[in-house]
Structure formats: structure tokens, C-alpha cells
Image 1 (cartoon, one colour):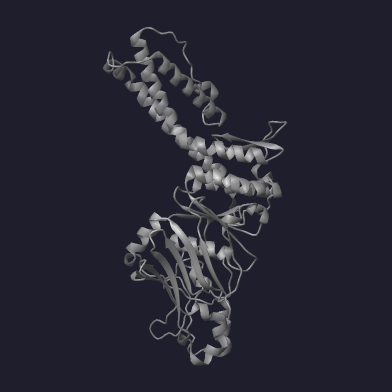
Image 2: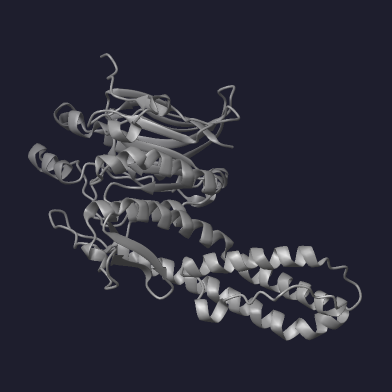
Length: 458
């Protein structure tokens, strides 16, 4: 099933948004002023399919729905019950905490409107004798062992207000064994969010509880360009290891396979020559991309005019072996070809080359001295990080969400952005949802755009 439409009702208590996804171009743009919920919508989509339900407890909304091409839909419903508040607190505090009082369900609804499945993902309903808990934790998932709980009953109005100002919701996740149907849908609909703060990556989350009023220790962050460079080097080494394993196996079994095929092959010299030339071109391209060393892996194309049948049979086996070895690099070579083409057509005074030890290496056009990755401009880092994630992290047939792709980009880069995205989407076969303020990103693709911004009349 492909996603065909995304909608939300009463987002922030104000907006109703409906976003049909373009099925042909696979690229949809949501555009609108600050404050209409573009980023929040991306987070809600990613939260639903990535099982990060906490976002639904942080944002006031009534109903959030994902519709599929079969007509069924997945709906997140916020059922609010303000009666849970003690009477003496309700009128004073309700305007600020109303979105945090109730239960949030995920429901699978068929095209006829019947609820087939329902799962409670978050709840602030009172447990045992408590009216309402206020919790504080650095974990995404709360449990009785790592939260501070405070009972509103018995507190003064001022004390209760202070607690609610500090942490305004308490969301308790349900049990995973109750939602096998939801997990199946989540596994079959992958999402990938490229957020606006993409230049830094959290590498170590701080776990454990904290006391109300104390700040959580900061998470450790790593520059994303460095993380991606190390990741690329690892991918290249993995491909080379596989290449080496195949080469060893082929070399070890070559005599046996040669003897077994003796006299059983009909080999045309013209076809053999054509394959050799194709392999020579392929190996040269892999060397250009930095995947193979020129001295070690250059293909020695023989002179043709060979009449001996046995020699032609041996050469045909050799060709098949080389084809299988080089096939290891097919996917990563396609990815690197597009990445280097895009980056080197944008960066004016430096060139990107791929290195199997370091991943990315940049050097000035008129020199060989490497440029440190952290010395790239913020616009260059945004471009490199964004397209690396699209090419290497995003999975085929997934929904890719990009928040504010225009950040730090020159107008010329913004104008070329959609054509680059379409090129990558055609290769990786995923859908793209872009949230932007920039008319230069949209350019002349107004038919791909959904305008957000009109508030629901009171």
C-alpha cells in the first residue's frame, strides 16, 4: 500500500490540513507561513511509523490520519476528558493543559469507515487514586522506575500550577504485544525524516530520571558530515571485503570449473570482445569513483583474433567471474555517481572525491591539500548531508520527509533542488514530502504544492 493522503484536524486547536501526495511525480511540497504546523506534520508522520508516539502528547490536535491507496486509513485520535482535572483546578489550568488530558489511540479504519483495530499508545488517564500525574524524565519511554510522580490532590492551587508549568503531560505507552497489526503496518511503511537541524547528530542519549526543576545533562553531538564520512568508508570497505571473498572463491575453483566446461561452451569472439570492453569501461568507472585502486584492479583486455576454442572457453569463464565480482559495486557506484555529480556541480572552488579510508575528501580545484570537513560552509554541509541521507540512508518504497531544504542554500542551489531530488527519487524509488518556505525551491512546480495556512473558523 502506498500513502495517498495525510490530514489533521484541529492542529493547535486552529488548523485543518489535508495533503494529497502526488502519485506520479512522487514529490509533494507543503508550503506556508511559520506557525501553521509544517514541521509538526512531518514529526507526526515519522512518529506514527517510527513508533515515536511522544510527539502526539506534545501537540494539541484532534485527529491525524494517513490514507492508503486501498481506501483504508490509519488514524491517531486524541480523546480529551477535561473532567479528569480536580474541579478547583479545571478552570484555571485547563486552557494550558487541555491537550495533555486524555488518551491517544491509533485506529485502523477500512474504506467503509469501520474500526478494524484499535490500540492505546499514550494516556494520561488517572491511575489508582490519582487525579493526574506530572512527570519528568529524560527517557522517551516512561516507567514506574524512572519517573517522578506528583499527585495533584492535596496540593495548593499555586503548587499544582507550578508543577504543570514544569511538565504538562504524563504519557504512558501501551504494551507492544497488543498491537501486532500496527507493527506490521509500520514495518511495511518506512519513513525517514531529514530534519532542519541535520548538521548535528546525537550520538549518546543520557538515560535515567531527573528531579523536577533540574535540567537534563546535554546529549553528546557529532558533526553529521563526519559521521556520514565514516559511514561511507565503512560501506566501501564492506563492498571491498565482499569483492575479495568472491575473488578468492573464483580463483580457487577456476581450474575445476575450466575442466568441467571443456568442450561444452559455444563462444563467439565478437560477444567475448564486447563483454571485455564493457568490463573495462565498468572497472575504469569504479576506479574514478574511488572504489577500486587503479594499479591493482585494472582490467587487461587481451588482443582478439583468438581461434583456439579452449582459450575462448577459458576467457568466457574469466569474464563471468569478473562480472560477478564487479556486480558487488553496482548499487554503491550508482549512489556515488549521483552524489559526486550533484556536489561537484554545486561547489565552486573545491572538488569531492571518494576515498575508501576516509569516505569524503575535499580539495581545492587548484591543489591537492585536503580541506577539513568542518571547514565546509553551512550551505555546503547542508547539501552534502541531505543528499547523502537520500542516497544512502533512505530505503526504497519509503516516505522521505525533508524539513526546510533551503537552509543556508544559495538561490541558485534552491532552484536546482527539485531536479536533483527527482533524479535521486527515480533511482531509489521513494516518495518525498518537502516542507518549505522558499518560492525558489518550488520554482515552476506549483502543481506539486499544497498550500497550508488557513485557520478553521471558530
